[in-house]
Image (tube, rainbow, N blue to C red; front, side, top):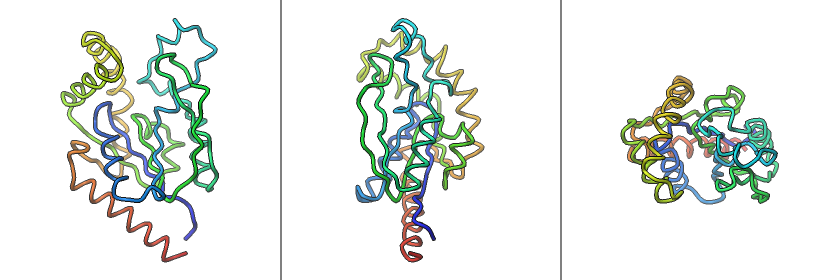
Length: 212
């Protein structure tokens, strides 16, 4: 067996618990084993647009993501090459000048709402996961997050959810569930599913180690 990393895609709607799932899995391994790759870091650079135009960006649409760069980076990591991961500035609504030097690891977890939407990304994955959580739970989580972490008002979050987030979820995110090898209901609260995922990863790593 080759030294190729195991690539795991973790998708699901906003507030579904994707990040909690990936962090819970990550905690069961050493820092040298798992690399977390967040699709949110790969929103398109909008520095060429006036600030007023950037404010109109629909971050819940597939076209908001620079998948070409993300795919290029995942391919480099698979080849055990280092990358410079971009950083997105949510206040300026464009890519930051900052980058994060990132080395490849044995397991690469790619997490984001749209990671299963692009067939080119799916083709790079060994395991595809969809975190499936009820819509009422997801909107509450998003509401709390945007108010606490992003200084949003309740009205603005609800308006955005009804007019943008929910329609985009139904059109682009929910249909990608059919591509998943594993569906995890209730996200980070599903400790059985997380333990099973972790056990599967350990088995793969042991097989790689034995073969090498």
